[in-house]
Length: 414
Image (cartoon, rainbow, N blue to C red):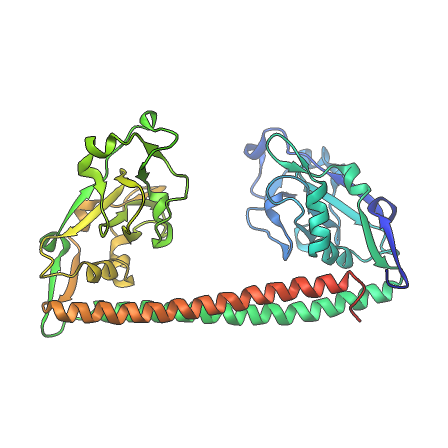
């Protein structure tokens, strides 16, 4: 260990370690304003997240007075999937309490800085140690108060050196975060450029172009309401559900549901084949989590079309290229009109009958359609390459953060 550093238990350097409780009545007892109740969803390594911050009244807060949060307390998630995430309590959410999933770690500030400890607990070496001590309960992982009290931290005894390390980390992470923000903007620009190109193409109404309703050139098939009681644990016949179409990507591994292989014959009408176009018809009001369109690839399982998914096919492939149709169904110009037809108060529903009344623009020359498809395919590949390249850069920046933190808490930052 570096000279001037010591290792101590949290119990030796804290004035408080403790978690709270959920008020009687649970979420139904939460108020629109009042005393903040910090839950695990509010605690993130990168900082406090006020999204869905709960509030309780004075009476409820008085029952949790032993877990009153103070400015600069370190908050640590001690249960569940987000166990070991931590942040510093911000001033602007006070007065506040914590529930049973969050622990307050209040330090003796003449011994160790809160922000030093926060950075330490977000480093890989300490994060792994915290995850290692978490007890595996029946339903969730948990870190007990005793385990936290006995948890050991290495730090320089000199507060000035702690502050210097924090300042170096602040500066480095600010630069990294700015670089990430620039890269994320580049990703957004690349995706918007592709969407703009789609709009430009599918908004055309020039010479040699036709405008028809989808019903004039396409036919559709709505999925079947298969009964859950008929499902089986495993077979070669899988039900294709809306969740499998998320973000216009077919993912058969998302909560797969299977039916007897005999259903492939019994419900042959709803059996999908390679090349079929399908669209999800239900989502959330005020969101765009539906209207996803994918083309069925070659698969190792038989796929059955579930309810609220629609299969779309063209009447005459010599008049309309199916890949052209798919690109059109993915275009912003079409989707904006599609979403405007949805109905429902909480659940947004599309009607296949209404969808068939929407129009499509396309060149009457099938060769020109094919050329557009190839141009978009090339542009999509370029966009995907850019996005992947940018994503790798973000990943490298995250690794750089981890490396800097590791050096910091090995006493190698100066």
